[in-house]
Image 1 (cartoon, one colour):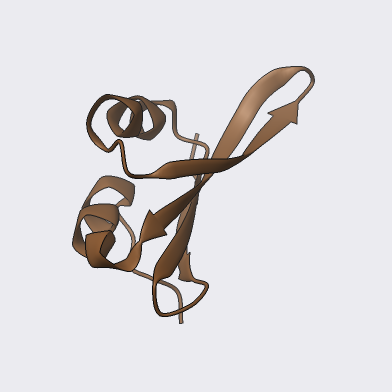
Image 2: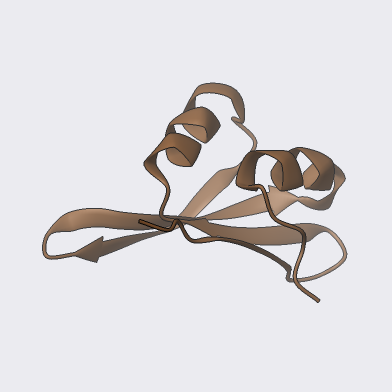
Amino acid sequence: MSTVNEIWRIDSDWLMAYTEDRETIRKIKRSYHDFIIVANYYKSGRLAGLQYKIPSKRKRAARYVFGVNVAR
């Protein structure tokens, strides 16, 4: 099963990120308290993915935890 991870810039101060990977969600919840959850996505009543708002200064950490580069 492939996991979906994406990061994109919304303005000069913030990035947005989306993941469906349970391990990534756990890692963020445990260690990245400045990644703000802005949306929960459900499929058949179960959590399918989370969307985060991330400060631009944390771009390097976001690229590491999500395993992808910022979309252009």
